[in-house]
Image 1 (cartoon, helix red, strand yellow):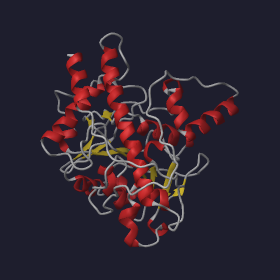
Image 2: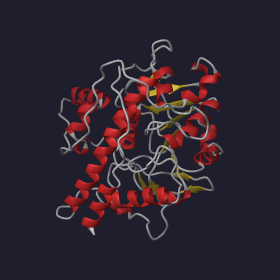
Image 3: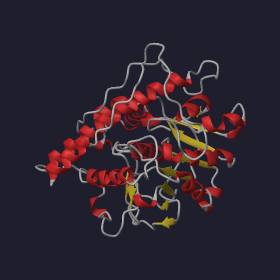
Image 4: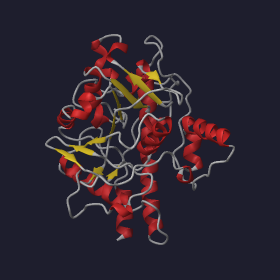
Length: 361
């Protein structure tokens, strides 16, 4: 069975997308200096590298599980089952294939509109939303609802979080673009570890979820890292509702329900699942992570994320104690940010959660 799963993972390796080396751009850069095509081209290149690395990681985890159990390796079979179903039944939407992404889906905008009717959302002032394509309409509704949007740069690779409001845009005509990662990088206000803020709702993307609140992402762990840092900052606590928008087919049935005992200590459970047709309040009893689990964080991932390096150094200085380090893992190399770059594919900037190619939407 494991050998079959390994072959299936290798067969679903996504096609390489065109990319160009680009010059780096700083969050909050002025409109005259911000090169959106170059930003998008670099984002697509790094997304492609990361997805290829996750294909290799899935294969390695499954191969290792045949001998020595790898924590969380079982998740890949469930992810692939959902991704395959979405592709085979044309539930998947661009960017495709949805394998090794937070999958975009038919009627993602309808799920976002349903989320916006939740009392938790309507009462919220600050909403943290992941940067993926299926949640683009959620970001749009946060801004048009007069709320503050907090969103991370994809994979935390160019910075940390940024906040954005409708008043901070040069005009409503740029609202669609503001819902993309390039727009947030251009007009967002960077958040530091010392920022004093309170997040009222956390919105995450998912590959699949179940009615007990168990959630699987795409396998890179960034939603968990973002959650851990926000918890350390005091921006969220265990009572902060965690909401996900998914297609109905991404909600696992009773047969495929995840055993909560198999979830990893860093996994973030969801309190509310919103699909195009229903709202599911999980009433989850799963514990939420207390913060960053340093003994699980690989030195390779730590080395690629500046905010985690800063946080680790700060905690060690304050406590006078060295924090533990997790096991090694193989990560995709970051592209060198040199050259003038070329034109990349841009998101549509419109409503409905259908951005351009790449996981950042």
